[in-house]
Amino acid sequence: MKVTIVSLSLFAVLLSSCQEKSADAAPAPPAPPVVDKGENAASDDAFIGQTADAAAALAKERKLTSRIISVDGQPRPATKDYRPDRVNFEIEQGKVVKVSRG
Image (cartoon, rainbow, N blue to C red; front, side, top):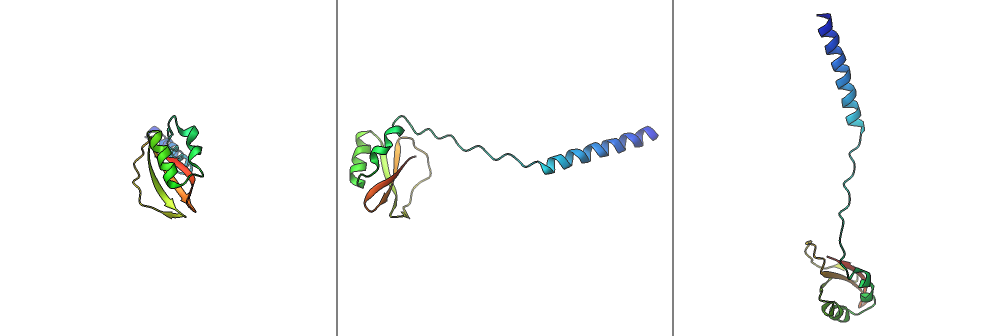
C-alpha cells in the first residue's frame, strides 16, 4: 500500500511539473510563407515611375498580367489568390510607386 501511495504521489508531482512547463512555454509563431517572386522579379523596378498605361504595356510585353490595386492611397477591389505571373501596381499622382507579385 505504501508503494502505491508513493508511486501515485511521485506521478502527481511529475505530471504537475510537466503541465507547468507546457503552460509557460509560448508556442512558436508560424513561419511566414515563402513567396516565389518569379524570374522577372529583379527587373520589376522598371515599372516604378511609369504611368499606369505604360506599366501595363510593359507587363504585357513581358507576358505578365497586371492590375492596379490602389490609386492615391485608396485600395481597389482585388482577389487574394496568388499568381506569380501577375504584377500589382500602386499608383500615386499618376505614376507607379510600388510593384508586387501575386
